[in-house]
Amino acid sequence: MSHGCLVFLWACCSACVPVSVAAAAGGAPAVGDDDAYRRRLYRLADRRRRRGGQAGAGAAHPGTVFIQLDGVGHDVLFAAVVRGLMPTLGRWLGEGATEATHRLTPWRTDWSSQTGASQLGILHGSNHDVPAFRWYEKDTGEVMVSNRPSSAVELQRRAVERTGDGGLLTLDGASRGNLFSGGAEQLALVLSVAARRGRENRSRAGYFAYFSDPANAVRTALSFVAEVCREIAESVRARVEHRRPRVGRGGLYPFIRAFATVVERDVVVAAVIGDMLAGRTAVYADLVAYDEVAHHSGPCGKDTDKVLRRLDRSLALLEQVAEHAPRAYRIVVLSDHGQSPGETFRARYGLTLGDLVRAGCGLPVPRRAQRTHSGAEARAAVRAALRRPVEEGADERRPARRAEPVVLASGNLGLVSFPDVPHRMTRQEIDRRHPALLATLANHPGIGFLLVRDAERGGVVLGARGAEVYLDEDPADLGPLADFGPEALEAVRRTDGFPHTADIMVNSWYDPGEGEVLAFEEQIGSHGGLGGAQSHPFLLSPLTLPDPAADGRPLVGAEQIHRVLRDWLGEDAGPEIPVAAPTAHAAEPFIPADESPSGATESTAFAAVDHARQDKTR
Image 1 (spheres, rainbow, N blue to C red):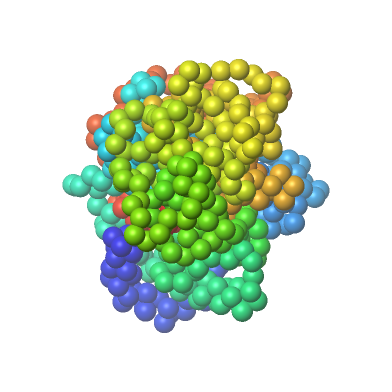
Image 2: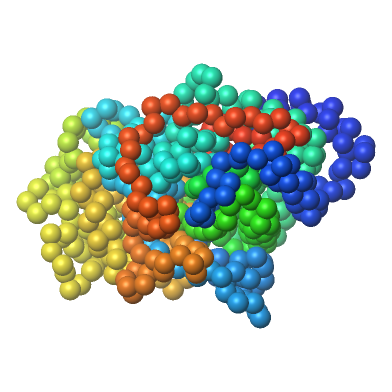
């Protein structure tokens, strides 16, 4: 988070003088005036037309803009349209007296319902071996984190190697605000190139280009300050009203939220506008605002309603720009996952998943965890498994420590790995080493099911009271998977086949009536595993494009969404030829402020936003 924020602050400081001049001239009152911003863009479009020669001008086929509303589930979007929070999308879907121009289609994520897995599959056609947001790889001894630049580079390399294809955006494409490039040459705020250093990766230059324009600087800087104040006020109100569930929102979080909801949104939208005015064929952009706010405020409420309204205004702006672009554009809106509400595992039981695992292994745990009911039960289970019916005293010998387990969390999905064992451990090996661990986890009321590997039959799902579901068969009774829906078995079966699946995969409890889960992180809106709205994102597409679910079968998995989007891109332009991933990405050329509203930016800042958003405790 530090580098991105420093870059932003440096850029803001460099723009102080023009901001002051502009504000003194009366620019500040127009900060929220979208019409003034549109008129400025129209003048820019007319200037470009007169100059001529822009890419895509006079193209016989339309371009396509894909806007990802990060974390917005299908039901959340539909409810927002019905309630009038998103009038632009409501008009597209034919709400009221208007005729529909778009269709809304739900789809289902893989077990790992998070941006890393979904966006990799959407942009590169493969999310194979991405079991979670973060996971431990025994062969390298590394923890892979989806929003870490070095991990993003490796994940993209693996996907390209597996598919033999550069990605969705290899043909005159642009990637804006994403974790992965999609094979695009035009990049801004793309995490998978953030680890590179050189002339092609100048993140500061992107901020200077954007904020050197006084209109951009005033609009974004004042909105940033307002958002910080709004978050502080909402956090105080939540504490005063004793809202439950609730998580901490102090420290740097107000600035992180403002960065995600204002700075990232403005820079990415402006970059997309520049792409449309330049006539590029395919643009994919991710707007992370809703996801960031929903983690701390919950998927539904006043905070997220405000974010959805602003996202709708951004879509309205892009719609207006499309009318002045040098080619026709189709605007597709989609999400990568939803969010499921619920309190945290720690808030309900007084200890973390890591504490519970350590207690089940007979390892020391913090005193606060020892005092909890769950901690006491785990210690009792260990004593019984080791035939030690009496509470051990302080002077008694504890079990010899081996390499301690690595416990990681992705929303309501937990992963337990034993780093000193080079292969994926079987349930029999785990039982021999820690006789009480699997029973302690499977029978805990906050855990829905476990996935482990049986030495004889392969993958097996474990639930409370000895329930077992083997993945080498199609059981009539789904046991602990029943509450998670009929697709859960296949989703778990797919993850079981990944090379880097953890020794124990832990999915939290899920209440199908209320749609609630228990996050293993400090989030009251979470995603990453199975259970509820987190697994049900949406795809909103123009009626001029083929219906992605015309055959009546549901859309399942990010890889299928990739095939749908690729077919759409190829229907007019002809089939794209798979190409290798570019060895070098050209940075977006920085056009002077009086010629471009976009001021293309680079990836380091987005790394800060997404890292802060998902990697505070996760």
